[in-house]
Amino acid sequence: NWQAHLGRSPSLFVNAATWGLLFTGKLVATHNETHLAHALSRIIGKSGEPLIRKGVDMAMRLMGEQFVTGETIAEALANAERLEAKGFSYSYDMLGEAALTHADAQAYLLAYQQAIHAIGKAANGRGIYEGPGISIKLSALHPRYCRAQYERVMSELYPTLKSLTLLARQYDIAINIDAEEADRLELSLDLLERLCHEPELAGWNGIGFVIQAYQKRCPWVIDYLIDLATRSQHRLMIRLVKGAYWDSEIKRAQVDGLEGYPVYTRKVYTDVSYLACAKKLLSVPNLIYPQFATHNAHTLAAIYQLAGQNYYPGQYEFQCLHGMGEPLYQQVVGKVADGKLNRPCRIYAPVGTHETLLAYLVRRLLENGANTSFVNRIADASLPLEELVADPVAAVDALTTQEGRPGLPHPKIPLPRDLYAPERVNAAGLDLSNEQRLASLSCALLNTAHQRLVALPLLEQPCSEGELRPLPNPADPSDIVGYTRDASEQEVEQALANAQRHTPIWSATPPQ
Image (cartoon, rainbow, N blue to C red):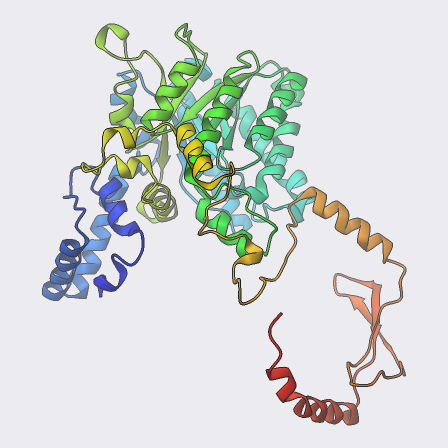
């Protein structure tokens, strides 16, 4: 029943269709959900499930051709030659998600090694700015890439990261550490810090890192990166993106009962943050090589003006996703005499089979299928041009005037604590990737380490300790964390009787 799913929400499916699947021109876009629902129902009614299944397979392959540069690195390099001839450069990424096993991590490592060799040979000495590069995903290189496994990550993953970076330096191609979820940011920064101080990488400026403008801490991350570049004497390549994990960041904060969200809840705040971060990156050209990844024409134009007209090679570059940004950037890359802006653009080029495409594709759909997405809105012919390229700063000012205070969160996205308000308060949790939280938790644990903890049956009347048995830590049997006494059969019977007697009172007690 397609009708049950269409028109009940902001219609991600139709937006996605309007955006990219149909953005190719190979399918027909429609902004009429009713017509789309009828068409889908008619196809299913006439064709049956087997044909639909085949159609889905064909659609995946069609999208693969649109959004993946090639199934192998050799195929991707060959496919890139057409746009490279027009002045574009590339950063290749081997498609895949976080490794779940050691075997997964080894497979990704081999894929990255083979890719660096192939890209390095194709680069033919063009260097980190003019030649192609590679992007790597740290969670693909270690099955336990999380703060809880800090020591393992530093001892097991770091040597892998170092070896890949040295291999990239051997060919003088840039290597970029991709952005991931917010709870992995500080772990990634610690790895970057260590990498930048490697004596074997001294004097080389091909180390890159991706930052996300939708994270509230992004400006301070830039401050840290500028300081790191100063201390390590590297000019770091910093790719600024808006962020592709918004939905999962919101969901995780709600499920974990965090105090707030690590990302902005209003898209326009991210747009303003992006411009502020871009200005900060452009202010230190001796320390940072900015790489501005955007498909938003207003953002592109704003950066073009912020950077000034005295452009020189190696000052900065734009970036876009393969299969999405080329129409926009074909107006940017090229000589001024030909009506272009004479600014470089690097295409982020995913490489992999259709089997590895799905997770990447879903992120693109979520990111660009939303009603607030520029890429989605540009396909809507009914949208006035002035609204499409509206200044986000002016939009925030208008919100401030309307709401009486600047920077208020989205009214329909309550804080995790208020998710179930007014009925009840959401359970609070701890962000165990937050170093300050971990420090306060560690301090509290140390303060109670020598307290004798005893667990006794919970009865209507206090009971005696009696004969206690020790409770060892399962991970360290020599560590006795406390003592307990099990309830006797008589105490269990008494507890059940008490519970039955108090049932009417408890049933009438509100959740709070």
